[in-house]
Length: 467
Ligand code: SF4
Image (cartoon, rainbow, N blue to C red):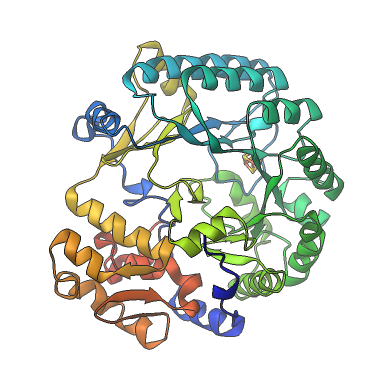
């Protein structure tokens, strides 16, 4: 095992900010290739049944499960997730019955002799579900699937609504990692985003989780929100770093009011920070987290040097999935609940975002997929290249040439040509053996990866949707 301490290059934040100013363009986050905004609804073409059959045949391929638990008691105005706002606890009971039915529809079609190596509960607010319902979900999953002893089982926690009973149940079902949504600890910012969350709640939630044995703690922050400045970001980091997180996700706020109408209030109030101010916040985060010893995993993710994510990056085994970076490569993902995405080597498919459509399919005894994508051989190669850049920051030309029987430089001449400008700026470099993302290129990983995405020829990049 290689630990990455010595490999962490010093961060030249001023240089990075200058390069971001000049070269950052909106683009996919490449949690998948092709990204989810290119999924379509021609389900016959996707042929999910055949994709599952082909996946079943690979008995060495472990499983990764995702459950989307969509309910929240109130709406945070910045939120981009698929949520249902309600205080009706009985909705959780009904949704549990939906999940049970979905498992009953999918499991008979699935080779469940393969171990589950990863489980993630996302939302919404998974802790909207009371302890007894969480216990039922755990029991349901353990009835249908065999979990590997080393499985990474994680959940998103809202520190405003989590109880000791819930935490006890989660630990008992094998949850070993928790991601706490904090965003910002400043009360003015919290008021502006409609999410009031005294820091004492964060401290209490972390203490409860650790006491129950859930020791791997991620903290989620956002920058670019109304009322934020480099000074408030400093304060938030002063508050959260003493919680000793293993990982930090510091997301850039994505303002998409045409998709998420609740965000319009920020425009009406004229509260959003100017781009230069947002960039200064990013600089503050980079500086502070580097000084605190965190490794930059890429795209908003930071981890302690001994965290499995940082170790996987150093070992070249880091992966990307729909939750961001992951250590569990080579697993087939099966998603449950509204909006969840499944991914096998050959195809992606996504459940409906509407509860009514989701239920209608389940009542008919069908898989509730509503759109997706079948990967061609060419797509799979593109996926390999893009994920190589996003995760390993490197492409091994010799290995790819041998495997694909190609001359890399000739086959991808257009792509390499597109990167010449970034090469001249020191963001990326290559020789006859390999392509490497240089340290200065880390904040622009997706811009580098976009050169290998044929749907984003350079002229069209400015119009690419952020996903
Ligand atoms: S940010 Fe989290 S808690 Fe807030 S509305 Fe979105 S999913 Fe719910």
